[in-house]
Image (cartoon, rainbow, N blue to C red; front, side):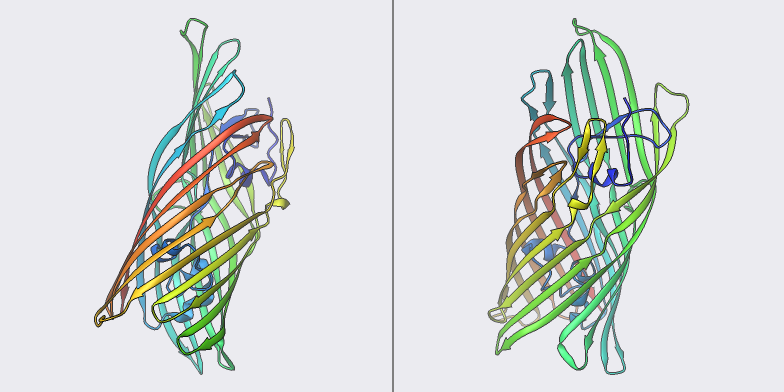
Length: 418
C-alpha cells in the first residue's frame, strides 16, 4: 500500500500517536508512532509556566528575546532535563490491541552566553544559545488479530534543537519599551547523530502462536536544516511604587526545513533514501506579568499556533488539524527579608497545552513547581518539575483510539555571572 507524503506530512507525523510515512523513492509504508511536544527552556521559566512577559534571564532568547535587556552583567547558563513518560492507548476494535509503555530520556535543555553592551545611548544585550525545541521520543506496541496475529513494536528517539543568535535593546525615547529578535538555526540535538530514528519490529504468528515471519525497519531522519526568526516586545505599561505591570508579545515565524530520510528494511538489500521538506507553523504569543511587590509576582500567557494550514494526504483520505490555543498561569515569590548575600525563590503554575492529532485535539493539562537559589554576584541554581497528563478518544486512520499519557519533567539549571 502506498502512502503519499507531501511536504506538509512530516510535521503532522510529529504530533500524531500513530501514522505513516514513506521514502520519496520507495514503495513501502512505515508506521511511525510519535508523540512529540514543544519543549520550553530553563528551570525558572518551566517552574512558573508563564514567562512571555517575564523573560528576565538568558532563556528569553527562546521565550521573548526582548527580555534579554533585563540582563545587567555577562552570564553563562547550562540547563539539563530528564523526562519520564507513560502512555496508555487502547482501541474499541476487538481486532486491535495496544500495550501501554513507559520510558525515560535525558537532554541538554539550554546553553547560552549573554553579554550586555552600550551602543551610543542605547542598552543592548547579545546572546548565543543552544536550546531543545521538540522531543521526539516514544514507544508504541500494537497487536492485530485478523487472519494471523500481527505484532508491531516501535521505538522512536531523537530531538530537534536550535542554535540561535539573539539580541534585545531598549528604545531611548521610550525606555519602558524594549524589543528583541532571535535568528534560529535548527538541527538535531547534541546528544544524537540524527534528528529522529524509528525502529519498528514486526512479527507474524499463526493461530497456534508459532512465529511465521519477522522484519525490522529503521527509518532515520538526518541532515536537518531549517531556520526562522523570533521577534519579541516588552512594555512596562504601568508602574507605581512596588507595583509594575509588564505586557509581552512574541512571534515565531513559520519556516520550511529540509531533512534526509533513509529507510532500511531487513527484507531489502539496500536502503531507500530520499529528501523531505517539513513545514513548521506560525506561532504567536502574548503575556502579562504583574508585580504586586518586590517579593510577589504573577504571570499569564496565551499562545496560538497555526496548525490549520497543514493538510495531511494519506492512503485513506485527507486530514486537517485544528489550530491550538495554549494557556499558562504562574507566579514567583522571593524570600527577601533578611537576605543579604543570597535570595531564595519559590515558583508554581498551571497550564493547558493541547496537541493536534490528525483531525482531533489531545487536551494536555499540567502543573509545575520550582525552587531557586541566587548568590548575588556569583551564580543561580534553579530546579523545576512539571507533571502533564491528557486523555482523549481520538480518531487516527479511521480507527478510534482512547489515548492517555502522563509525563514527569525534571529540569535543573546553573547560571554563572561574570
